[in-house]
Length: 98
Ligand SMILES: [Zn+2]
Ligand SMILES: [Zn+2]
Image (cartoon, rainbow, N blue to C red; front, side):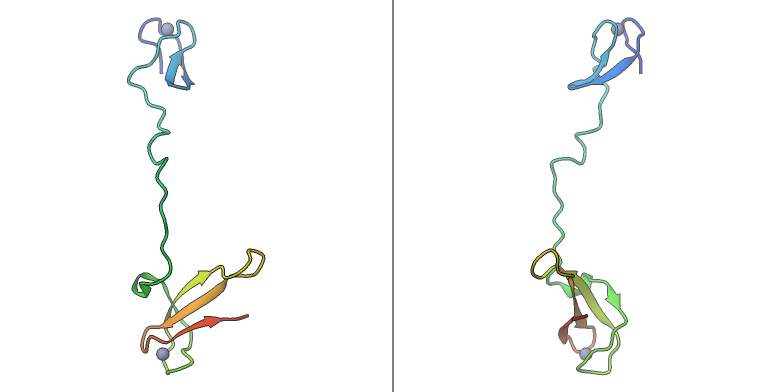
């Protein structure tokens, strides 16, 4: 990108692009840092099992071998996360220990 006034190269500054020679601002130039920032997307992964991925695992209660699952960090961070399963057939919930 180049300066409208003197044709020199524009460099990124705190308020957008600025000409390295005359200091003019590239008015219609955006840095593209504002888009996507400031908004946090929260992943809710507790209930609503229907949206969870399925996996092939045997239900301890019925003969079904498919269950929704999600992984949750249960206690301290240095412990391995626990996998939780919900049977797609009978709705039985259990967790997977190593
Ligand atoms: Zn300039
Ligand atoms: Zn089941």
